[in-house]
Amino acid sequence: MKTLARIVLTAVLLLFGGLAGARAAGTDILTVAVFDLESNDEAVRGLGPKISALLTVNLSTEPQIICVERAELEKVLGEQELGLSGNVSADTAAKVGSLTGAKVLVTGRVMKTDDQIIVLGKIIGTETGRVFGEAVYGQPKAPITDLSKELAKKIATVVTQKGDVLVAKVETLEDRVKRIKEAVRGKTLPSVAVRIGEQHFGQRVTDPAAETELAKILDESGFKLVDEKSTNRADVVISGDAFSAFGLRKGNLVSCKARVEVKASKNNGDLLTVDRQTSVAVDITEQTAAKTALQNAAAELAERLAVKIAK
Image (cartoon, rainbow, N blue to C red):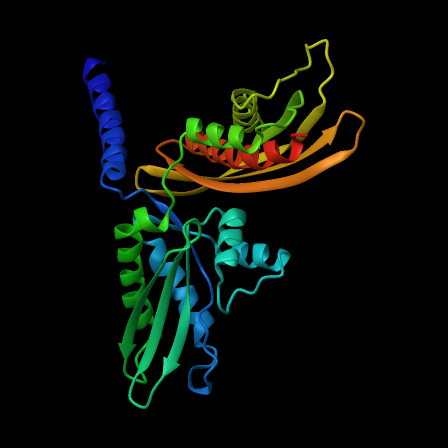
C-alpha cells in the first residue's frame, strides 16, 4: 500500500510539474480557429476549404494547440452572418474569439503562378490583433496534403513561439476590479442579486463557478449584493444559465469549453441588458478546466455588465 501511494504521489507531482513547466516556458495550450483559405483563381478554385480542413487536422496533432471544430465554427459564424472565408478584420477576429474561445485565427490564400503553387497563411491574435504570416511553395501538381502539413508546422511554430504576443497577458482579479471602479466612478451603484444556474454534462452543479465569480467581482467593485435571505429587494437582478462541456484530452491535459448567458433586469421587470460569453480553459482535470472556463467567461461579463447597470 505504501508503494502504491508513493507511485500515485509521484505521478501527481509529475503531472503538476509538467503543467507548471509548460506555463513557465510560455507554452500554454492555445485554442485556434481555422478559416477557409481564399482560392478565387480559376487554377486553384476549391482548394481553399480543402487545405483549411487539412490544416485543422494537422494542427490538432500539435501538443500546444486545440482547434475549434469546423462544424462548430461554421455554426457560430452562420449565426452571426459571418463568412468562413474572406478577409478577417480585427473586429471580426475579436468577435470570433469571444464566441468560440479561440485565441488565434488562421486564414490565408491559395495562389498559382506559372511554375508553382503558393499557400499563404495569416495568423491573427483575437485579443491583441497582432498578425504573423507564413507561406509554403510547391510544384503545380504538388499534393495539397504535403503543402498543408508543411504550413501547419510553420503555423504551429508561430503560435507556440509568439503566444505571448498573440494572446493578451493574463489579467488579475485586482486589475479587472480596478478598471471597473474607474468605469463606474461617480455613478450610483445598485444593489444586485446574481442567480445563474450551471450545468456540466447535463447535470446541475451545486457550487456554480460563474455565479460565484460574477458576484465576487461586482462585490469587490463596490456593488451591494443581495441574496434570497436578504430582507431588502435587489435593484437589479442578473439571471441566466451557464454550461460547460468536455473538449478533448491532450496527453495529461484536458480542455473544457463554457458559455455563460445572462440578462440584467430592474426589480420592476424592465430589461437592462442581455449578454453572453464563451471561454475555453485547460487543466489536468476535467472538473477544474470546466470551472476555470466558466470563471473566465463570467469575469469578462462582469466588466461589461457593471458599466451597463450602474446609473
